[in-house]
Length: 448
Ligand code: PLP
Image (cartoon, rainbow, N blue to C red; front, side, top):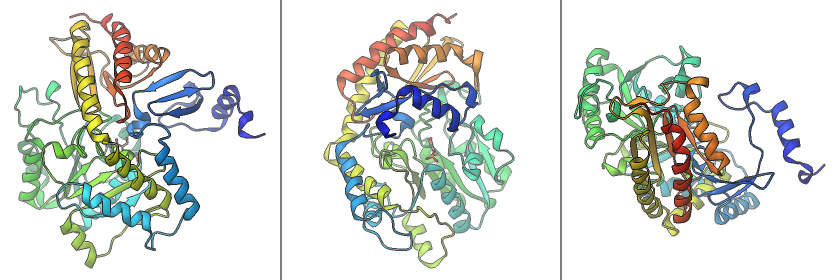
């Protein structure tokens, strides 16, 4: 039977029987059969439409089925689908050249991977080789990917299942100003970064530390924005001890925060930048590790110990080139900034009506709404790592939003609002309307 013979029911049955889905007990799942998508919307086999306020996994920055992006992939497929990583290939070279121009500071050469985790794996290995040191400082509220090393860098509870994992990872706390991990009011030594890092290094011996890896703006684990000065203070401490600074902008990069890169907000440049997702809007699997002029120089005389069959896959790189061009031609970063202002203003208005909104954090189209049961104590609506019954106050809200045609997700008690960067005013307003409705479900738990 052809593809047309697939009904939603047929798809559901095959999926249930044969597909293993990420991070789930398979029997507990009931995935929605999706028939298609366009722009900021996707739809099911019943013809119900959903406003994609997640951009899927915060990767579909140009929305579903952008015609120019689809056409670029089609053209590359007709020309050359694959050639080994050892050859010089146009889309690969062009994308690397474009990245050298768009990324901040003196970031220059790129190694292309199949996603964010592999970019981080390579960044860590390279940092170890360049410095001749082993340890890596990473943070608790972080996600760096699911492969063996990347999940060890990751702080969030998904790491637990992969332990003991990669050795040599030591951890620092996060600049979570709404819930300062040290219990201090701002500015505190943890939230301001440098002093906390210095203390960790004192115990770890800075001469054994190869790199510090952070998401400049934490994505998955709660949309955490560092205070001004935080990233710069990390930069200074790293420079003092000859430690490399790795920024993981897999989620925050490419316009998500209303600048090309999140670190551009603070003018701080890493030694290694890792990206994926928005790099090509996820139409073909792709990630990148982009390194400074100095490391590029090092690589000219030293072995690069990394490789993948699909390093610099032409279809992926061609979609990267097209994606970055579309971003420039259609002023997508400006749209993210503008629509973000509208979203931010709308959320601030919702906070006046909904006591369960404890904190709103965001720039561009990278927003987190933290839900609490008491604004004074900041008691979270769902506890850290809350699952099942404990997570119910938020899962009920997400389900109600989906029923109203708004696709949302959350990290425990933090709603993630990360729509495609091409979203329009009416769509932002529509999402705010649905949120206004469903937030009453969170308000029901308010005890403050
Ligand atoms: N780093 C960050 C900041 C991410 O958000 C993600 C994915 O969500 C990753 C790394 C892992 O990327 P991938 O799933 O493409 O391996």
